[in-house]
Image (cartoon, rainbow, N blue to C red; front, side, top):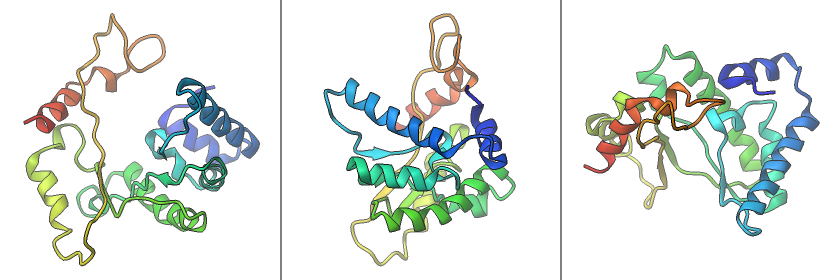
Length: 188
């Protein structure tokens, strides 16, 4: 059963989803990926809506990633959330869960980027000015050759009659004009 972005977190928090079911789903997704790619495994893992950093999932994801030989994982620790999006409870929850998840990822020697940006620059907030603000925090970084991930969702809005993401018909995200905006910024 699909619970949605917040529903899955609620069900995990109240303990109604069993750990063995989580692991079963992860293994099945890895195996399905292999089927679709002639035996290849993904190079990295990231969970839809960052579910892979949830405390009830993170240990299983990390252990199974290592078991399957997947060494890279997304770490959505967007430091800009703390200053720009302090009132966005969902983004703050993700950042806080990510801080804890990083300890587990380190335990399993999973690799991840040095900096992650994107939660504060989605949609209409995806501007050159905002991207420059994110990059500005790197000015005092002493490490050379930083690995930086900029999360974005460029694309064309789905036609409600043709298809896209969602069950039955495209969801609001698939139809959002903000995807076109991100595409236009990236290709400018």
